[in-house]
Image (cartoon, rainbow, N blue to C red; front, side, top):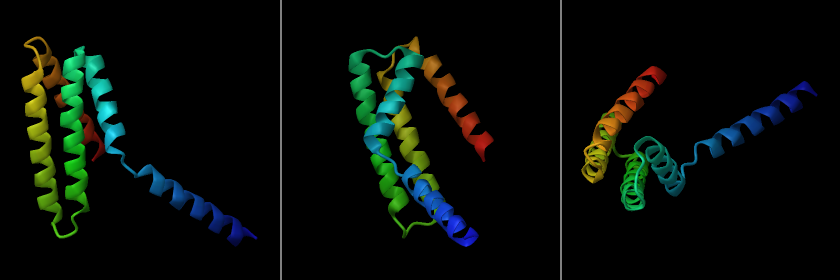
Length: 117
């Protein structure tokens, strides 16, 4: 009886983990735009442009990660390049008042990322 319960719980845990790792590019882009809008007070035009940039980055990132022929280091380098390009495009859209806040946002994000490692 214990084996059946443990097997069932293990199965439910595995299924939950599979769904948790699914990334929907549109949702990720919307989340990022919402977060940036709160931080930077983006205009409607800026929101639309940032959404397109982030969506393109997320889709490219998924494509890079799904390419099994690439080594882990190459994947990491390509993702960093995609991120840098996207951040540069976003920075170009911002006003002079928004740029320092965006740089601070990126620094906080990097700090949080390093804490998780």
